Amino acid sequence: MPTADGFLGTNAVAGGEYGEVTVDDATVFLARTTSGALATFEASRFATGHKNGLRLELNGSAGSIVFDLERMNELLVYDVGERNPGFRTILVTEPTHPYIAAWWPPGHTLGYEHAFTHQVRDFVDGIANGEDTHPTFDDALGVQRVLDAVGRSADEGARWADITGATAPIETGGTHS
Image 1 (cartoon, rainbow, N blue to C red):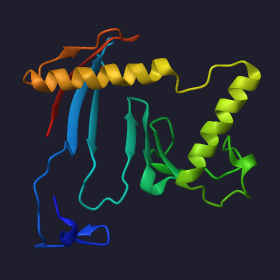
Image 2 (image 1 turned 180 degrees about the vertical axis):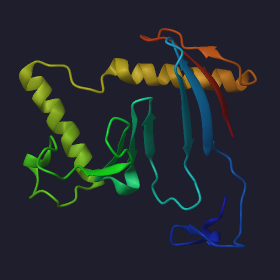
Image 3 (image 1 turned 135 degrees about the horizontal axis):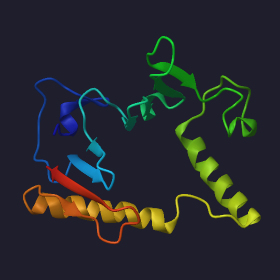
């Protein structure tokens, strides 16, 4: 990984100085749901060309949805049922966005910090209305169980590992570096 002297702004400098990597900076794992569907998860905290990339994709037989934190006011949607299918961009700053009423006129961008405001609003509204809000402690515990299974799988030669105590059992096969 480039050292502090190997960076120009947030970009690695070609031929710059590199140092030892002492943390996991990339991972990939497969998951299989009880219905047999496969999911691929990939994460890197240092991917060339990305500044703050957090990209989530859901791909299925009827379409796909893509969210990328570097383009956080956009959602890419692909619907195979459309007459001329192809990815289209939906701006989340339009009047139909569930949080737009709390902000400025439609079309103005929302930033990273606004997501935290939305979380607090949902939490307070949940308390006021006596409703559960998400994520819950159980949601977080489920994530930790998945991560534990991925770690066990990687430690044991990337074999499939059951997720113990999961509400919806899945298996993972993982590697990390």
